[in-house]
Length: 323
Ligand SMILES: [Mn+2]
Image (tube, rainbow, N blue to C red):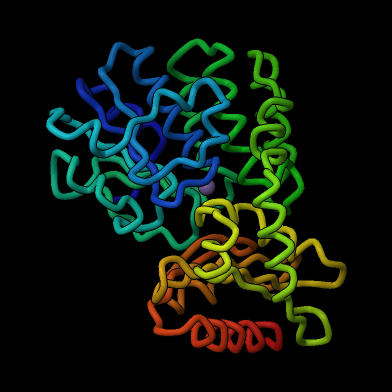
């Protein structure tokens, strides 16, 4: 059922051993939100564990509070009486962490994706919030005193989900919350450095390879490129090292829709969709079995060849641009 903030807080206070879960292919909001709610619950005396059911890109660990997060394997066998899922639009997004839930459904789901399916016992989904971390902050500020570690993981979630305060989701409230967090000691510089300035020579080479595949269509409004499994192997890069690449495509002048296709492993194509001002890419992603936000969405296609995925998604984007 749909729940209010007060109902969620009441339920969280009843927890004794809580599991806090984020989504697969985690971003800064999933990681920051999970770390923040875990810290908040521990400050309340609840035995809480934070879990990301997937590999966490190494550079996020530079933010102190994220080190609290555990893998599914590390938490197996621990009994939980409460499960909270954060920043995931449907249950498939929590991957193997579903095996850790004490019940069939999560007790609480907190999210801001318009595509959220409401898969928890209590669901609080606020699409006008720029980040799930802002919802976690609404809870935290009512319950516990803040320190730098807590404030900084919340700022991590907000900063990454707003493209460091440059997306259309940013409003006066976003800056007001950031100011509150800064007063509690949160620093934007180490977050920006960890997230935006972690390129290595091999990821730069991969980025150059990706740009060699760039195509422009629809009078330059649609731009897309790919990273194939072969390109990843040649560069010696993992799939997560394409993080931020789609933003580089969107950065082209005049582009409205940017798409990055990442093939990994063969037969599986991850599609990242971004738009600049008006195209709702969450609709394109949802029609292909994925989800997300109006300006940032994604889906995974299982197809024999990379070019099959490209043909399908590019056609859907062309149609969306004409609407
Ligand atoms: Mn988010």
